[in-house]
Image (tube, rainbow, N blue to C red):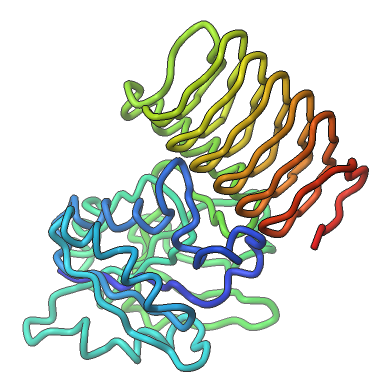
Length: 326
């Protein structure tokens, strides 16, 4: 089987992180977000993944070469010269996806995280006899998304509601309700929420991967190469990446600390994302969806209330209200 991953364009909603790498390569739970999908596809027998991309395809492919060998899966690219939406990339990659036997293929969005019940989806698709299947989920705010109206028992899709338009399906499309969690992690607030849902799922499915100890509260993922000092309190809902140094007395909650970061003594970080190779100074406080780009250095005793800081900056004075630091 094959799969198409819709990579898309510039990842503006996740800046400043996407100023350093394309969005699918931004770390989520200590690995590039697209790698979660590729590993799930490999696990159910997919042999080739096509990336539909229009921004920095060479960066993506060069980075994924290592995983192509490690996972023994072919990764190719279908490059858009201009943004083509959702259906456009499918048409562009038609020759790469369709074979003479009519083997079905997967289509995924690169910034969606879930438990990827792909095996169940194959079984559902084979069982209903229609032409295509989609995965749907229930959300708290349906107005943010398109709404699918379907027969409850069979899953046959009747129509889509995309305000202000209504599209009628041709009775050949079926919808499977997603078991488990779902989150579009393409913007910071949803990224932080997505990490909580992911770690909750990891607790149920593979709890041995989570950190334990007297300094751990709730679900925490710590890379084995990270170093954590004495007297820290870590969690809940924290991911600490490779090579990080967390000095003594640090408090972390609901945050991601990416590769190579150092958090100095008695700093406090909550509801934030700390980009690669950044530093947070002693007694600093970082909160309220602060996003530090790559190689940002926050001084001692500095406070950040929702600051969005571009890469390679040094912050010497407090950010008292949410703002972009360029």
